[in-house]
Length: 213
Image 1 (tube, rainbow, N blue to C red):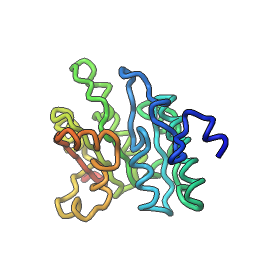
Image 2 (tube, rainbow, N blue to C red):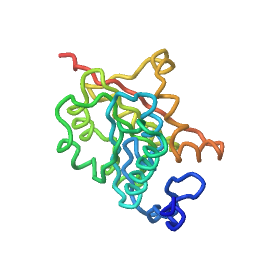
Image 3 (cartoon, rainbow, N blue to C red):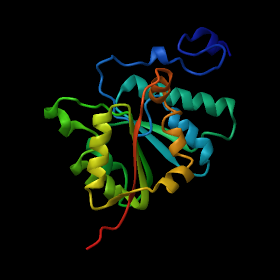
Image 4 (cartoon, rainbow, N blue to C red):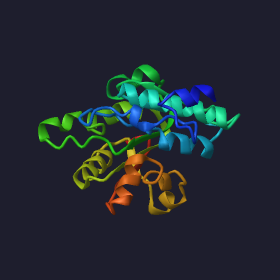
């Protein structure tokens, strides 16, 4: 308790780290695979307590914030949140270094950088060549979840997935039955901000399949 009282990065009322001490510069370029400030990762932890999950984040301070947040939740909720962790890395470059073929069951790309300029589209986290890597680490039946508040980017991600031979869209019935879909816009700071401002979101949720010959 004494440490919390003397540490300005920790909230006295909740015991959790304060975001304002961990925010990166506004022009930093996050890579968000179900991570960012950890909202979705933490929600998924209690929804699937027996499943191991990891968040990948490019920004130093944000990664440190998520680590501190998870540790604080473990202390205040003994026995919980042991199944999640976070690592600082550039997943666009190093995903095959972390996972074996078919190891993953779900991947999340929530509110990624739109990279509006056409010359920067190759840097988008969903692209034809990166989908090849995601298909490698996703097991058959595994699901990619994407969401954005930028309509053009939403169309881009959906088009990339639709045109890839190893992915197919979930049906309306499957989307309604999947409890994770409901969290995409509500569990993250970005999604909550869009909702407060009355904005729109654009989802694309696809399953990894075996391509037909």
